[in-house]
Length: 457
Ligand SMILES: Cc1ncc(COP(=O)(O)O)c(C=O)c1O
Image (cartoon, rainbow, N blue to C red; front, side, top):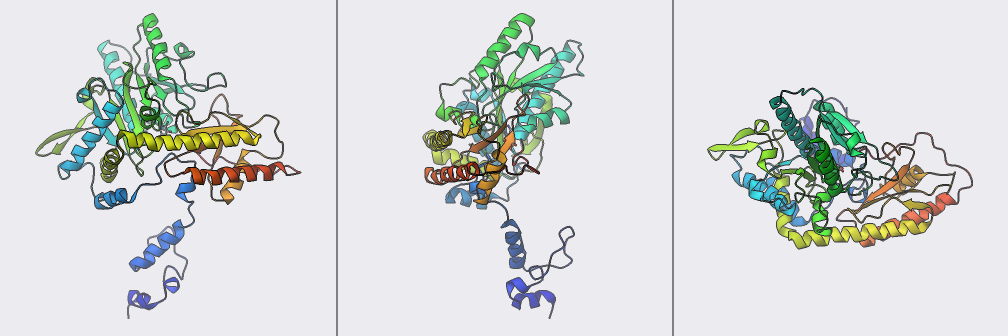
């Protein structure tokens, strides 16, 4: 009898693989039965946290059953095979046109956009378009192109630091402060110069969820242009906010209504309400995406333009986005985002009432907010201790230091997503109250060795 036949009869947890300790870094010599292999994967990942209780992530952790069916029916489709899957390609096109319209492009038929694997790739494409456009203008004027820089807040997401590192652009970080909690145009003239390829404005700062006032940043750049002649474009990193503001703050002017906004990116897998990984980037007009960055792939016997860092990529997420647009429509998105915001405000209000904490913001931009310990409240514990206590109950509520110039300040943050119901939020608030009371009752200081942030930007 061969080994796998013997395994067939052996009780599951006594089989090879489950009954032994597997080598982790070499591929096993022999096959396993499918259900043994699956059991091992299930067992090992059982130790992961529960994604629904992960309040650190912005990424979608709940979709309905029909979405799961769409996913299951399409997870074998490769987004780059436009010729083989022309309908998926056409649906991708529909989706970014819908976004161009949602973001008030003056004429969406003149816009250009693409799906990506997430906001990081989308931001890099936005940055690359800036860099190439700047290089072309400088070369045409016979000027030096060796020192491009990009201006943004010190609270940018790490993808922008990566962009600068990978594509040789100097990052110019404008530090945030208690007076200027976001990049708001203040002092901008000290950071921009003839080598500035663009300015990044964030709709929904990762650290806190606050919107940067894009219109004020644009106004500051208008004034700089009037004085110096420098015409500096804006990319809006709307990883979260570009899928919140159109629904919850329709009168806020942050998008293509501002002439200076050349491109906008978002994560379909955040408040676009799709599972990871999906992002989008749209340029207001084809003129802002230099043609020499665009490659052609074959499509229905012809050619289709693509601009991407990846080649192969799942097509299923794009179909999920389309499903969500059709399923929810504008009103449905508004209702879902409003429900998340109601939960965020309820939690923020409850946390403020505990007495130990000061709110940094209250979730009224995107449904995300942060808080810090009141000055002088206690010497016995800090927010990392509260993070650990909550983790024992399954909740992941990360604590971490703020960026420059506020690195001495530790905050804790909650990202409210579709799926954190008011009912579940009431349980969370009760846990925060109970654990704060526990920590406040301590008579001696908790150890602080080995404390570290549970979230990285
Ligand atoms: C403002 C901002 N930009 C970019 C990103 C990167 O997004 P992704 O994880 O989709 O690559 C994030 C992620 O949290 C973000 O908050």
